[in-house]
Length: 411
Image (cartoon, rainbow, N blue to C red; front, top):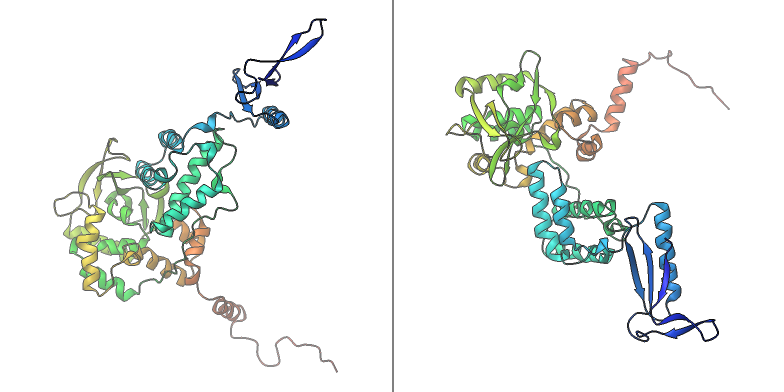
């Protein structure tokens, strides 16, 4: 059924001589005059009303609707009446993220998006509202790095609204909306002396975490979730297949970050450190739920356990072991000196030895070698030094006088 424009103020009736005439309706002069009507793809009639003197506008609107339907780009105008709050509830309920990631996403949406935008209808959102929201986050003192994560969550949520044909465009993608970009932080890797100093100040049961993080590039949760069954001394490799993480304050085993397992080389010095650790702290099985707090029980023979024999809680480790070791080593507390600093140390050692960015990215478990390059490019040996060494190696000791290439002499 083709769409049409209904005039609510006038109707057509047969005249006295059989000729149709326009007569006023009972609604003449009351309310909106024109109603553009059409049947949507779902078979139900839909409409939109327009005031007097806007028939042309109603016709244009109806033409656009019909064109969108013919192109397969139709969006029900009523779909966007959902509030941001309602859409957020549906979107969060549809996510299939890792439970730990989901908890963080839900928390950011609840705390930093809905208080500002939750009552708005989706179809009323404009780029200016996103820009104003970002300004409010800034005024509230939210760090730029965290703003970026929150913005990414909202962008994904509104992108889903576009995919679900609730709104035609994602206002976060507007050219006038600038993604929060924190100032790039230039990483300064720890020296070998600092690494060893902090290691020596840790409780004996935790000293080998430094060897694994600084010698294999493992994340904190991966170190705390490492089982003796994951280390193959004969092959000289470590299989990184799990981490210990907190979900709603409860520990679980889960895949490493990004759901990506990997295998990294096991240096002999790290193998010896693990052997010495096991001689003093025999491994014992620890059972935790897998992936979520109600997941199936999974058991692993962990290298590291607390004094009670349970899996180490990273926050407790940080406050009770790591930070006191920093203090004793005269290393300032702070994010840049967390246990993650050992991964940076690992990266700097490998790059200084000439390892490729691609290999380093795989060892660190990064999803994109480009991210690894952007993070550590300033730690790579200078191109001038590499050039000199490459040419020196190619020519050996260099040509003997009188035997090298000559150039033509010109007057």
